Image (cartoon, rainbow, N blue to C red):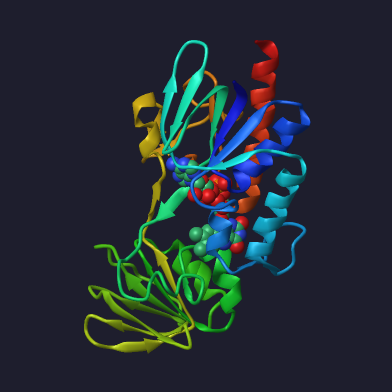
Length: 287
Ligand SMILES: Cc1cc2nc3c(=O)[nH]c(=O)nc-3n(C[C@H](O)[C@H](O)[C@H](O)COP(=O)(O)OP(=O)(O)OC[C@H]3O[C@@H](n4cnc5c(N)ncnc54)[C@H](O)[C@@H]3O)c2cc1C
C-alpha cells in the first residue's frame, strides 16, 4: 500500500511528491498524459520565480527531472475512480487498481474552447486561455479577447496598443479607455493564420481584425468526473479545501487548479502542493 497516491503530474503534484519523498513516504504519481500538466500547453513562462523567459517545456522537464532523480514513480494511466473505505483509499485507473492511506487530487482543469477551426492548432501560437500568464508576451501589440467580464480587458489595455473586446455576456459595459474597442452581439467565426501563427479573426458581421493574439476567457471545467462517487465538497465544481489543503474527506487532499480559489498560477499550485504534502506527513505520522 502507498502512503500517498497523487493524481495528476503538474506542478502541484510534483512539488508535493518531492516533500513526501524527502520525508521518506511511499508515494506514487498517476498521470494520464505526460508529466508537466498545463505548463506543456504554453510556450514561454516569464513569471515563475527563478526562471527568466524560460521555455515552458524546459520548466516542465526540470520539474519532472527533479522528481525522477529522487526516484518518485510515475504511472502513465488515467484515473477513473477513487473509493474511500475505513482503512484505505482505492484508486482505479484504466489499467490497474492501487491502494493508499491518503490521496492528493492535483488534476487541474481544462479550458472551455470556442470550438472553432484553428483554435486548437494555434493554442500557444497566438491563441491563449490565460491573460495573466501570456499578456506580457504581446506588449504594444493588437490583442483581441473574448470574455464575459471586463477585468482581463482592463488588464490587457495597460499592456497592448489596442484591445478588441468581444463581449461574450449580455451585459453592456461602459469602458472609458481609448485603446479598447468593445464589440457587442458578435461572435468569432474564424481564426485565421499565417505560417502557423494567428494573423486575424473574422466576426459574424464579416469584419476582419488583424491581431497578434486572441485570449479566450470563457471559463474552465475542473477535472473531477472520476471523484463524483466520493461526495467531496465543491463550489462551481472546484474542490473546497481548508488552509492545509484538506478536503471534507479524511485523508483526501487537493492542490492546484482543481481547488476553489482566486489565483490559478504555477507558483501557487507548487506552493499548495508543498502545503498538502506537509499536512499529509503530519496525518500519516499520527496514525
Ligand atoms: C495557456 C496557458 C498558459 C499558462 N501560462 C502560465 C504562466 O505563464 N505562468 C503561470 O504561473 N501559470 C500559467 N498557466 C497556469 C498554470 O499552468 C496552472 O495554474 C498550473 O499548471 C496548475 O498546476 P496543477 O498542477 O494544479 O494542474 P495542471 O498543470 O493542470 O496538471 C494537472 C495534471 O493532471 C492530469 N490529469 C487530469 N485528470 C487526470 C486523470 N483522471 N488521471 C490522471 N491524470 C489526470 C492532467 O493530464 C495534468 O497533467 C497557464 C495556463 C494555460 C492554460
